[in-house]
Image 1 (cartoon, rainbow, N blue to C red):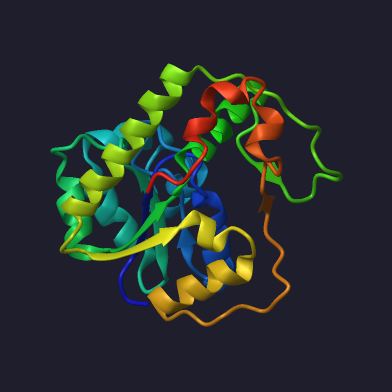
Image 2: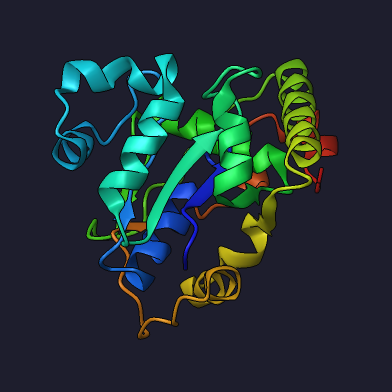
Length: 237
């Protein structure tokens, strides 16, 4: 693997799962998360990696993302580097997009059933829990959420527009589109796709990941007004 790996997607689309599998396949790699979001995350890791104070890193991803990208590449050296960026983390005219097109291998991770993405976001907002550690014992209690049909329609339309816009923008990049639904059932499926794209060797199985799927319930079972939004319960991409 010679190029840095950038996972392009939106929230609640399996990016943490994907990068967790990647980390198992590249244990010596530098694997970060939303470094280009204003304020970002991974601040302790970024500070250690770059030598910059956290106060500088808080806004660098938005104010000068190309400089941050260059720092990350330099700091990673010969080690595999993987980060993620969401469609809305940088302004449409930001130079970071062209830099990623020129220098990175892009995994465009899409969730074909966009309604699942919205439900996942609503459940995370309601619970205040954005990921489920694998060490938590027992299945979670069945959640319940109510959805506004107008909000559902708007959300799906916006996500479809994002995907199409970035498919077009990255059409000449080293782009590999991966469907969350095709890799979510088994980490081995995810690892096989990563190996296909990057050339990394397959890891040993069974694979122990630090996180697990947060919601295992079917949408009709947890959306209290499912009859009002049932027409949206289908593949959108």
